[in-house]
Length: 382
Image 1: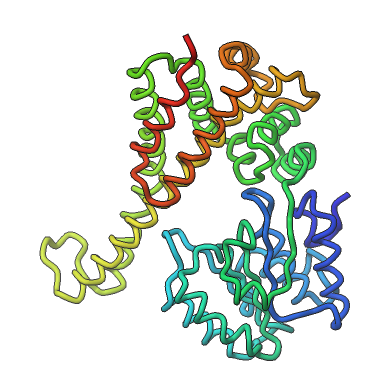
Image 2: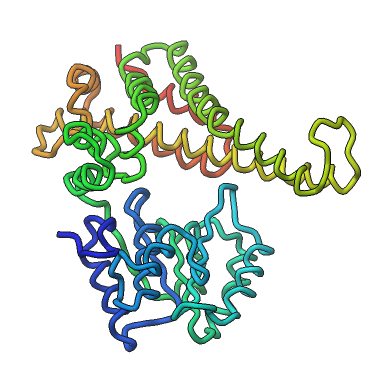
């Protein structure tokens, strides 16, 4: 049962909620730096926002007062939410956060700085934060979110209190979609299962026809890679899905950002020639947009590979007769085809090949090359 108030959306995390709630109520359990870790979709940033709201709330997290509402939606004067759409958080941004963290709260009990992507801090940025974490400022609280402890440099994590979140149960995610978003229960159950309990992706699958179609296109690849040509085509399809989704997501936003920048600088958006300072600002914006598009495309590819891996996982469960629920219950024929085509060892090899591709892409290997090598390993045995 989820705790009430601000913790209502932190589903399937009773231990974490207990730890954070105790810190709100008991000064002896409170500290100045926290590190919240958990797998993608576990709700790290939601838990951090909820904690920030509870720290500001006169009642410790009622969920309905002005402090709770503004802290949760990112408009509270003393709660700063930091998330990057680029590949990393650089040292200059970190220094700005250090300066912000050195100021006293203006209206709230604490100044709370939530870094939702602490794993994307560069080494220099993390070192810039280290000094203020080592020498805490009174009434400033740092909340760092990352997938795992290993994603944060040891000097920072050793000075932070660790709270680990887990993958929430499918039923809990489905219940949240029904309760919070008004999703039909059957659709919510499908989305939570297909998203493998990733809350954000579950909501998208439940509300976006295109997302469901793209997922179906991705997982169907497992049944059609028979020859080298099929493997090359499948890799191209996976890459194109990412390119199309990235382009659709960024085109309008990029144009609006450019227009707003020119207006802010007093430049004419229709002019073909701009003063040097305007050109420099536009070039910096375009670099930032390119980094954001690169990260988004990588994230789309990675999610597609997680979906594809789920087919081989289900096939292995089916092949071994393990009493574990399938992710793709609606794709019975495809899962059976893959299970019959591969030996258990072959299915493990396929899962390993997909994991290797994810690691290579994360290390900046060209996605198409990594996908081609992967798909060649996924060919159905003759």
